[in-house]
Image (cartoon, rainbow, N blue to C red; front, side, top):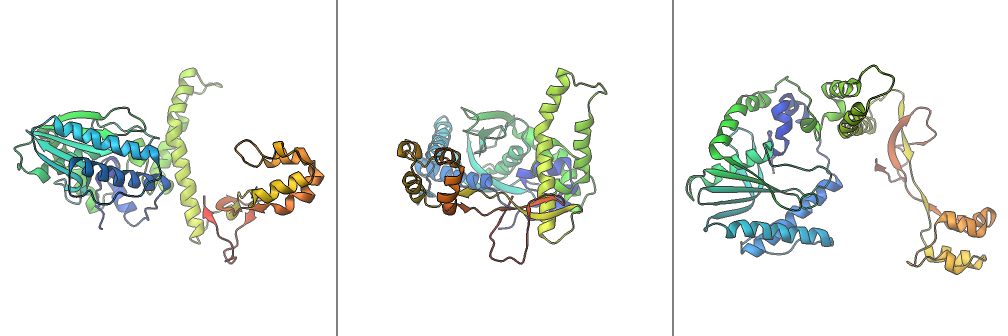
Length: 372
């Protein structure tokens, strides 16, 4: 399925930095465990809501082995049901493609409900790292505009728009921001020029904390690098930071840390692709020693004279290697248990030239590595 050039989910980025559309156009969008978790939560939430409200999409339940996610999905469905019950019959859509009225800008709204001139747009956010507010939320406002285009007067003219965030792992209740259809249309008119410039290949760059947070070009963007340098240097010349400066630096830390992570990821990707990263090389890092057969290791430790009650914890679980080393002594541990240890596969990372980490040999096809 084709992706929108001006995705509502990336609206904070392309509205602030229209040039980002051009520079990220051909960059790969690599998934993450967090994104995959969010996808599972959305599928489960859609199923539970459709089943509870009697919609035809309720067929087979998506597989789930996460009790918390199951409960959050069920409460998401009950939340939608409560909103529907507060109004006279209307229209309800789940996971609905909506077109915002801006060229190149469309997306999928998690839930749209319209009745009596009221339009509700509910966005399910399953993340727990960043709290998302519906107030002046560009993504939700675009979904609201798309929902207005979708209903198109079928259930009467939309007057009041209620933009909602359901983020169960941060908020106890649904977060809602009330606005009007007219205000959303005015806002759309105010960003049309920016949207057109972005599609035309704008050269206007601007770094912002929200806009750059998930930008695919964050690791190589010099404008963002300059922005973060100013963040770090925005301190007085005193030898010791004041409490206020300490607090200010702490507030900037998540943004700076995320940028550094993006720089590291970009450098690693360049090196893996055969590009040069001066004074750095690819290496195998990490890897830990473990007992693949804990029963055999425990039996060997007991046979060597260790107390069974100390070899096995109450879980039951094999004691740590440090504990076993203490129980048996270093020499006996090396003789009896070290032959039973296996080292896990390392990870591929970019390290400095003088690092002692094992150099990665791309010709070693027997090694299976993950990328840090």
